[in-house]
Image (cartoon, rainbow, N blue to C red):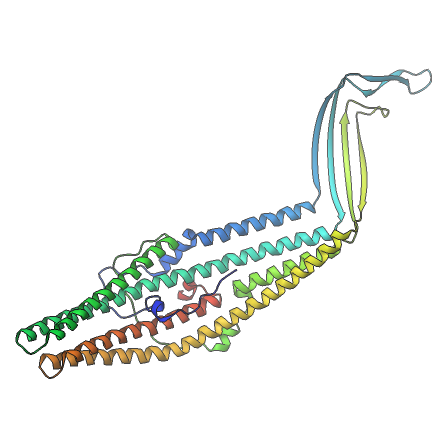
Length: 438
């Protein structure tokens, strides 16, 4: 069953799906479409779902084959210890002929055809397996969308981690400059030893932030390679969201259920279970089969004919405790399947609603976060200038740099939430990412 991806805590989302501004690198990261194309063949989840659909399709053919006529050809050879041959006259005074009841070397060839004439339960079971195969085909599409979620998440994780690393490197450069200035002021007797230690601590804090971002970047690269078989390029680039509004919520909620693979698969599974329950009830109706056998033998017996046929009609009716219990079991399974379908429908609709609402509020939060980041950067520059000119304190510079980095992190966080909401909205509504890009 398709699982749903929910919004995570700030610590993990910060580096999960951010698209932030960065200088254009010499070699940009491959487009997302290239990773999605690789995942279609490299993802083990996609391959498993595809083979499961093939298996279900063959199961449906097996069930159908049981309800179609079949032909059996069987040949036997028997070596008898004794022969039984009787001379007879067909007419008084006529020629004598031998009736071979049992020859020493007996050869038999049987050509048999069986055809079910009435088997309502079998026909219903074949229909149920057909619906199960159809549900498996829908599940292939649902799995592909789920894999796209994973690919997009790791893709934007890589971009976000690189953006945070760049911000941390700029913070490190500023912290190193501040530490050098503080040591100079200490040598001149203006700054204290505590100011020097505090400045050096900020340098180490910036290095720690770089290490965290590099860890997230390497993990995202490995995850992308595992999912898609494509190795991400060394240089990363990104672009800001244009903060455009999505289509009205009513349009997204009116998405036909047949176009959402998760819902379509759940509906087919419910229909399959209902058909199986109907098949269990139809097993109370007698079945009628016909059998035709053509025999070719050298043991002609009393007919004196080397080949002859028989035609048989077989009627069967069975009623026992097992039949009654099976009816109840299948009815309960049908009810469970309908409940699961309803639960899936509610979950998908809630996901669409949540993603749309988070997109709407994410636009506002991104606008605010970008303004805060710009203001924090200006404040850090102003604090550094004041400290350089002797009008401010070293503590003011440290605090301003921390605030600037925190504002950049908040900006990445806001853009991450927005990008994630847009992606989740489309995938939950059954729109693949590459299809949406086209």
